[in-house]
Image 1 (tube, rainbow, N blue to C red):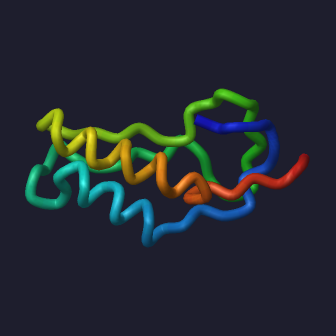
Image 2 (image 1 turned 135 degrees about the horizontal axis):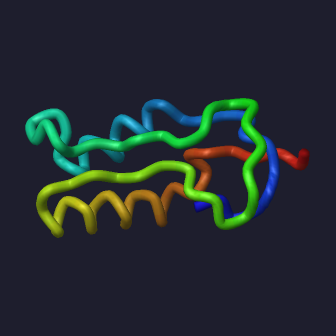
Length: 79
């Protein structure tokens, strides 16, 4: 979720790939990260930026822990 309103100026693709891997991708074909925004998009505070899919609760927990520790996967600038 967006912690504030603004424009998406960058998305760290390496960290998105790591997030998907922690969720179980590519071994689990249903696992991964689904992005809801692109660079340049305007977002509102609280808007969902991506959805993480995982089959196992433990993998989902790993992915959420990773996002908590890496809050700058999506970088926003004032719009």
